Image (tube, rainbow over all chains, first blue to last red; front, side, top):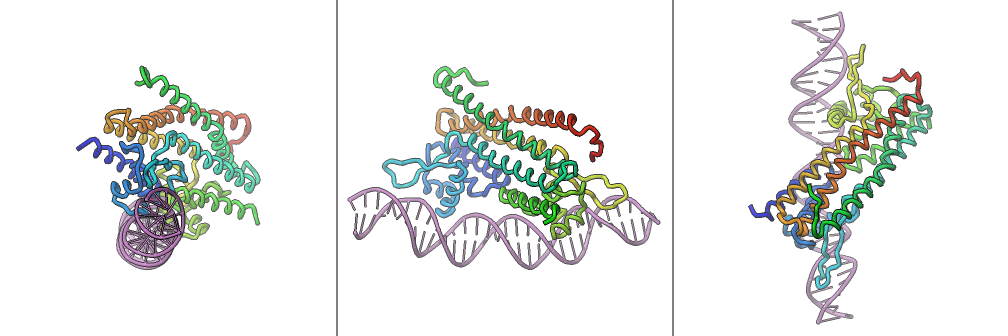
Length: 167
Length: 167
DNA sequence: CAGAGTATTTACAGATCTCTGAAAGTTCTG
DNA sequence: CAGAACTTTCAGAGATCTGTAAATACTCTG
């Protein structure tokens, strides 16, 4: 099995995992193709061929991924085709997006608390815990992600040459 | 609109949000019913009536939620029916479970790196970033959740002196 | 241990989703 | 500005999922 085939195999495996986690199958396949591709960017035609899917399917997946920040269009001088790639820092941005979800969960918990009236009721206690938890995460997660960004950037600088990083 | 109806409305709204985020609709509705219920626990029959769904559907949802730690059976002396409730500390546990996903993502990234061979290739760089990010999160998130647990427990002590009422 | 009261599983029906193929829309080039 | 090269949209076919109803399996009580 060539290295390339191995990469594709791992890509498909990850796509499957993501699909089980709720992501659309085709969308996941497009994303992992981009993520594991040895090329810097891929065109819609490339994806059609590699994944054996129609251009319509690719278009749909691209739309979704773009909305989530997991895919970006790259200006491709000399080619009419759109070129896509998996963006740098996408993972961190993804985590940041989840902050939206954390905020929403916190809000809903708050609304529930209001409706419950008394925080001492069963619902009140459950919702208090929920509100507290999500408020905490909303407060603590962004700085954590920022710290990673800083760490990683620092590592990258040092690494260019004598990268002592590693494990 | 009574308080109870308001609670149910918020519950259904959250269920809808969760469903859009990939969770099964019925499963989400069962979970939020339990979460927002003024009762301490609910039986399958209660859920059937409140949500207007069949007992089979409840059974399925219970199975899924139990597996995710978002629902637990409560010993119900005097009643033959199973009583269910939303467990204390479920949110924290849920976040901890996501660690499993973080670990998996890290592993897959590592496998990709091996298959890519050279970390300097496009795939190599993308996967290096991915592996680093997930390793970082896997390292930092559990302590964060522990800190919340400690904080929240401390808050609770200070506040509800005689709260023996617990469950 | 028989039997009632519950929970779970199963087959099937209905609904939903998703892909394909083709038409329509866009955007460059010559 | 006409035409080519792509991408996006759309209607319909096919696959997938999910809930119901009924049968089956548990689990207490008497």
